Image (cartoon, rainbow, N blue to C red):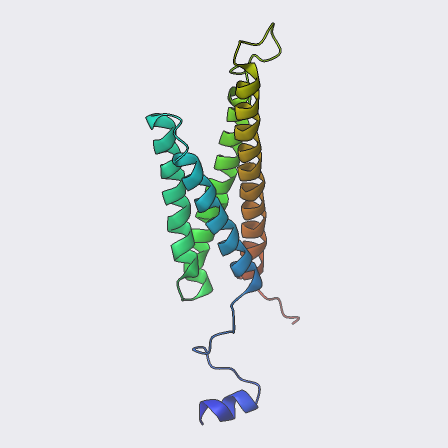
Length: 163
């Protein structure tokens, strides 16, 4: 029986690919790509070698999940990458939440006393870093939520038959 005959009878061969792929997979890949770009932008921001190395490491970690997710293959092969993306997205979001106080204008102490002479530029710079961090947190939480939904839809569940 040919592939066309099987497709005509409603049986789709395992090697047939869907047009763009699973919509959740596409959204998850887009979220991971956005995370890679945001972390790369923060790594190139020039905030010191330690900060840049940390952000570059996060970008590479997100990129490894992205490449595994984009590659063709069975869903069960991608499950590990999706679990890793979910865990790292949650850890990254938590890390950025914990870093938010350090990004305020006065080094975390903007509410204590007078601002220094260069205050307007410091406030603007602190707000810009805070806005970028909030964007990263939002993207990471969205990636984690999409990963949870993807895993729930693709996990194998036992079927129960009445006796």
